[in-house]
Figure 1 (cartoon, rainbow, N blue to C red):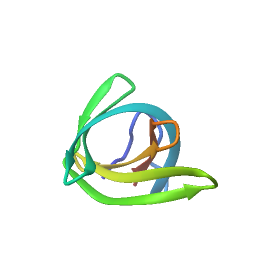
Figure 2 (figure 1 turned 60 degrees about the horizontal axis):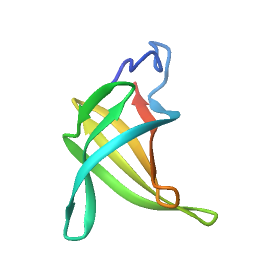
Figure 3 (figure 1 turned 90 degrees about the vertical axis):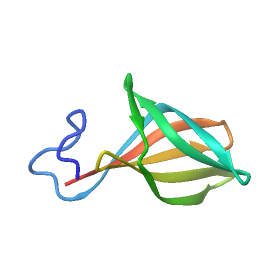
Length: 96
């Protein structure tokens, strides 16, 4: 798992998700009417998603959101899609 991603985690960080909420761009495919993210661009780096570990819908008041947990080279990122304004964010990154 991740020990450091762009300085967000350190040796003293307990194993946990670190909240970021930073904009990103996502590309993917539709499979049986559902969007499946395949890559994302964050901080001028491209990440190919190896596996999605979960997908969940979130209601934040009247704002609908969808969270994807994506594994990339052993690191785990939570990607958030705001379905109201159609914007993507790297919401969290797992740090150990």
